[in-house]
Every structure is written in C-alpha cells, then in structure tokens.
Length: 69
Image: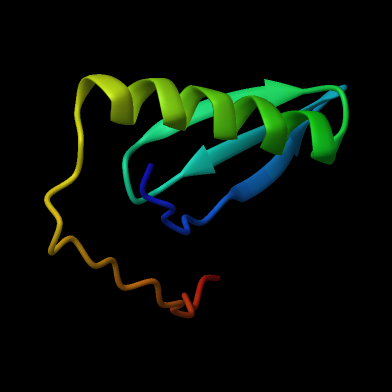
C-alpha cells in the first residue's frame, strides 16, 4: 500500500465541520474537526481505490489575498 499525504481544508457550517481534500476533490463532514478529517480520510481512500492517482502526481497548494470593498 502506498502512503500519500493530502490536504484537508476545513470550515464550519452551523453545527457541522466540512472537510475538503482539494487534491482529489473529496468532501466529507463531521460534528467535530477530528470526525470530519477522519471521514474525509475514509472518503479519499475509497475514491483512490476506484480512481488511483498517477505515480508522478504532485500537488501545489498556495494562498492568495483578495481585496474587497
């Protein structure tokens, strides 16, 4: 089994936490941050079982600022 590291982007919506993996597009949720990440990990593993990434896959994560009125 090949271990890969992915990113979890988390935000709160009312009473739940939503976790998103931008590298593969999986999304999950939970009542805590830990539960949301655990559910996201499971969803991502299931996704990768069906749609494996190319061995040479590399992601680039960056940030940017937006100016608004």
